[in-house]
Image (tube, rainbow, N blue to C red; front, side, top):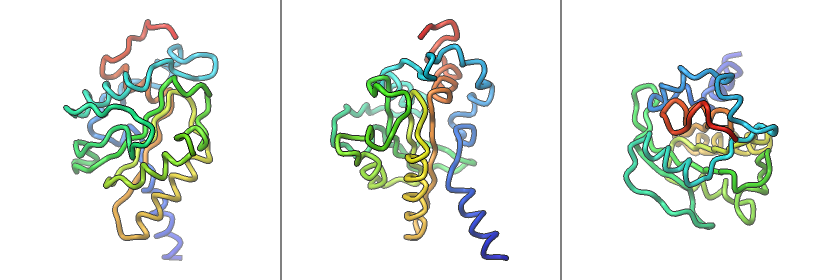
Length: 183
């Protein structure tokens, strides 16, 4: 019984939510229904990836803007993320409105579908996947498996999924988007 409880506890701590990140504490004031009108009929927020990256850099205090190119390990890397008062390194994969689908699939993650693999090569403890729409369950299962594998290697690892609605909550909470903005 003790093993099962330990396994559940380990699994539970694999995933964190935006509300768990100290740097994003203002998002707790923005209820999901407050930003629903900012999403189109497919639940997608029409914001470019570069605009999202710049907003995250600003919120997290990152001075260096990394230019987007096809073979990068991550879109944003910083050791400025704080969770429960502890500073950690985080690697972000950001997907904006350039991805034409409203549900992000593994095949949408890089030309060869290997962007998630490259993300987990980053020297990070938190792996964040952000998309302006919904993120498929297969991506979540894949990320969970990769996070669990890191832990099995004795490394600290957690993941965070930020869908379109949570992206809108963050952008609104930090004045990067207005509530009267239309999609």
